[in-house]
Image (tube, rainbow, N blue to C red; front, side, top):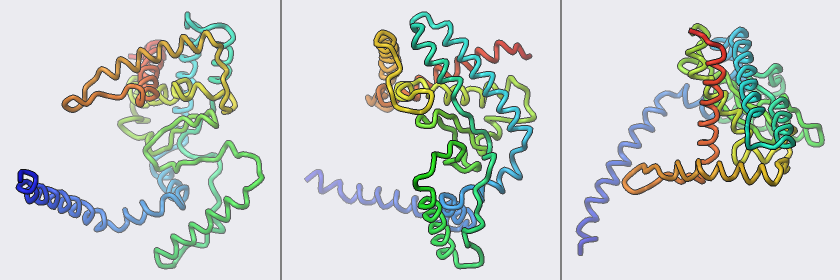
Length: 283
């Protein structure tokens, strides 16, 4: 039968893929130092981050990023004030949320204290367990305490950025604040074209289809008027349909609903970064 006849070929192809995956895994395992860092990172992330920041991210770079974030937030503020479809009450709440949006750049102002972590000259597996125990003890000790809004949930050495709706904050670890995204030696035109768009993207997440559900304090509440919510959803629907028209592989199209938040943030981020770059008139 055709299915039986094709089975050996399918098995051979699958084995080839497995062999290729094994080669890649062996290469990772060969670099034991990289593997140890990857495995330990979730447990003692800030300790690794301290080393990275000391070598790769200066206080002057942090200050420059803070200035860029302030400028791009101001550009969005001007945009919100000029939106013809947004009513006065919703506009006021949107501007309140933007003004209250926290910013974490590079590294924490206060590093996590690892004095009681009790890791050191032990076998790797034992160090891993000791680090895990330290993290559990720390979490238990914090039960019933006020939320620490200054706490970092991502290590500075990670290449990423995000918007946290429940904290109404944007976070840019030092890992992403490296070329080509951000270069302290480059002029503003380069940096606004790189990290500037990322800053705009993360700020806009606060107003995308999910982020708009959180208020200035990070509470999930509906602060939109009925009319403005309807106008917003109508415009979001246009973005959803637009991206849903893109075909990726063969006849598989983008699911515009699933990618809506990222698409809104890409469009908004690029626009407000460009608006601020144009206002600076560099070059």
